[in-house]
Image 1 (cartoon, helix red, strand yellow):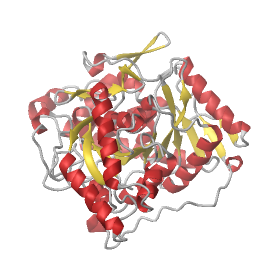
Image 2 (image 1 turned 45 degrees about the vertical axis):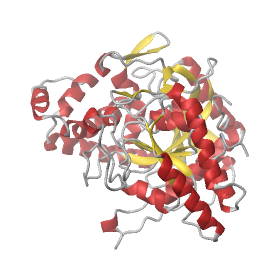
Image 3 (image 1 turned 90 degrees about the horizontal axis):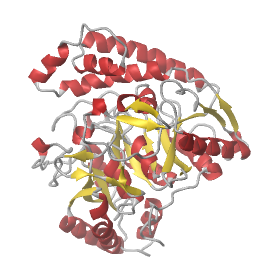
Image 4 (image 1 turned 30 degrees about the vertical axis):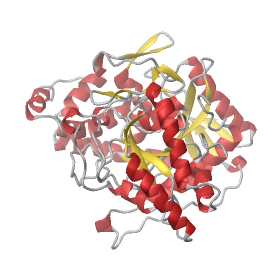
Length: 483
């Protein structure tokens, strides 16, 4: 077994049948971090002694015939937005640079209960608020395919670590593409579950100790295979503890699907040609992937999105940006209230208004969002999955020396503001749908390109099954950026 890039599923099986020890695997992964992380800055905090002790304890339990669960003895990292008991949790913020939680986030606790050994934390932009990963606590995370380029965000450290073989499994979060964007930029697999399937308690933001489940934000794994996503989802999914007395999560896989030829696939690659064009090299990867699925027998149709990118992006801004505004200092919040009465649909203006949005504005946006969800549900009566771009380009050169509002992407000579560039992810995220991000291949420059595979609400297990069939039919699978 190639321990550098084996999947979490393969490693868990090897640990279970005792062909590999947890201590051996942990030492291998740690050596890998020591060798490659200096160039990447993906793993920013380590918990070596506790992890080593836990690995030895897992091996002793295995020898006695005992297993804690499906992740027994598996070392892994989690994004530095998740509170970890006794281990530094900063969310990239200077004011939290010494924050050591007393308890684990709910999802982290579930990973540990299933036997996982959390040995480190991965980098994120401050409060997970960018699709590049950089902060004043730990610095910039580089892409393992080209260290001059971004690893994406906000789960950029997570995706870079998985791609580089520094960890077999990761727990990320996604409110505007923060799992999907880094999976795309780094050539790994990511699952943004349906909203509410994986609780966010213990996630920063909000503030430490917050008990609110943030609208739109979803929490899920990044890994090197579809099977790994399914494995992790089975561990972290479930109701909040106070709901568990009466609520159960039973995700239905639906009718059995055995072959890709049974699938009805819609593509929406042309949707953003005016608002959000796609780079030619990225579009070529997406088209090859769709053609491969069609050649394997699937029905593949180009369709119009049930909700336009412009309308979907506006909904995302009006629903999500008030959550960001909630954490602003009072003086800053008051500054943004001045924008409330100003007209205009420019994304920058909508964002500014939304930072100080009132409940009245949010409720109206929620009403629009519910109609958008109904429109998507109607499309899924005709198609099993929808394929959409993640971003307009592959990983781009680091651009962190100017404000987010001033940053633009060069899309084949067209300047696309960063506030628009996440439009594909925001549009899908605001309607709460599950998404699997799959690798589709690489550009002529050797950079990975991913695709969003979108399914109906709460179809997560069925979506993983369908995503696996698409991946087998047309995907390159995971390929490592270096030995």
